[in-house]
Length: 208
Image (cartoon, rainbow, N blue to C red; front, side, top):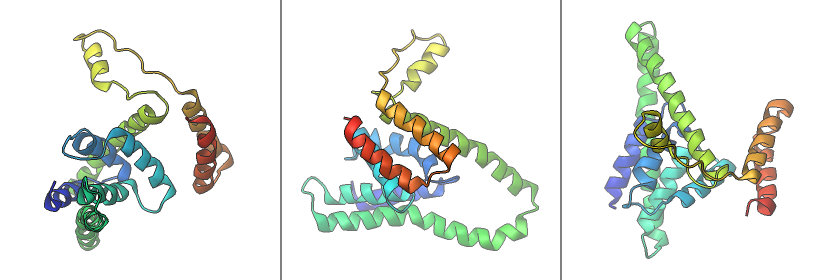
């Protein structure tokens, strides 16, 4: 895939990144992971998500850099062209935000009382929540269950089109880490950085 195509794809992602990088996860899955034209597959994306939690930067930005590098490096794994690709992917997702922030800082104060602007923001927020919830379900399919959750088959079952799909296998170790981590964050207010380090160490021994 050309660098122009990589830039344009992540430019579109940058335009849709309302509510944080996690709203992009369903879009990344549909447009990159499930797209045979890209090198990134489900396992690689799952690893990228885990690494993104341990490194600076939001998941959308890290994905732009990572996918750009993979596409630039190609099958020959050329480091130089990979770095160029990483820069292109990163620039693509950052460009819209740069101009949107400049525009918002100039016009938002002027139009903050506008019912149309309030309506637009009111419509974007719940849609962002839906995308974040979708991202949560996708991550659970990568870590808590043994395979991705069959959303389409469940919808077909609810509509009476097909029979109930088989429930994917359950990973007790993944669920245990998720439950304990959630409890520690809500109850003990454990720093997320330390929590990720502890989870990584525990996972090295039990998530195999």
